[in-house]
Image 1 (cartoon, rainbow, N blue to C red):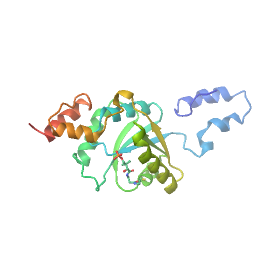
Image 2 (image 1 turned 60 degrees about the horizontal axis):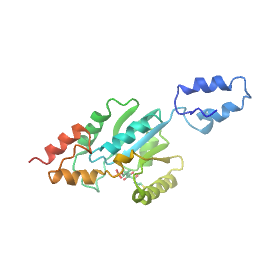
Image 3 (image 1 turned 180 degrees about the horizontal axis):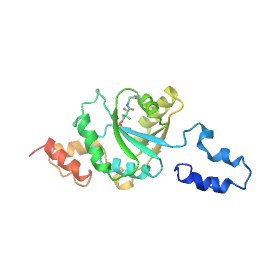
Image 4 (image 1 turned 180 degrees about the vertical axis):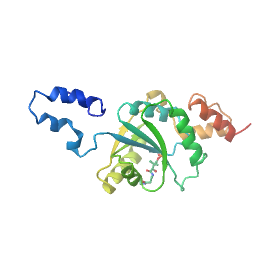
Length: 197
Ligand code: PNS
């Protein structure tokens, strides 16, 4: 029996299979027994300056794994973003509007504090290449040290987006290049407005 506990709809199925078996099978499958709430909520944090097709690919893939996914845009004052926080949130809202279970939000301060405030125990991050690993490894373990309840889950985007980054896209756009293969259509337009002519 390998049915996932991720979806609420699975509980009835799991319960059905468990009935007639020894009762302790319930302890294996009910997330409450694991200290959870019964719903899996994940936070996908990032700068999203701007959202790329790689981000969107990850959002679509992960939205089928969790009951709800909060895409959380950081209000990081250290990096000077091209798009304001409000612009980044608005672009994400527009391009994820058709994906069920996805909300867009923003946060400042520590990611683990934000995750707790949202009742989420999972942080989702994309891993594109080995070059991402060291930074992601450091961040995941640091976050887990600060708050052991929060675990980081990594997913790979489709290989066709594995080389994409927001910084490369900003550079191409600033130099007048065509970014249509790399970002959703509404973002192409926003980049044109940032770099007219
Ligand atoms: O898209 P990015 O810029 O790689 O995202 C980095 C982000 C936002 C996930 C990271 O900077 C972060 O979590 N910032 C919040 C502040 C924090 O919690 N810092 C400690 C992380 S170890």
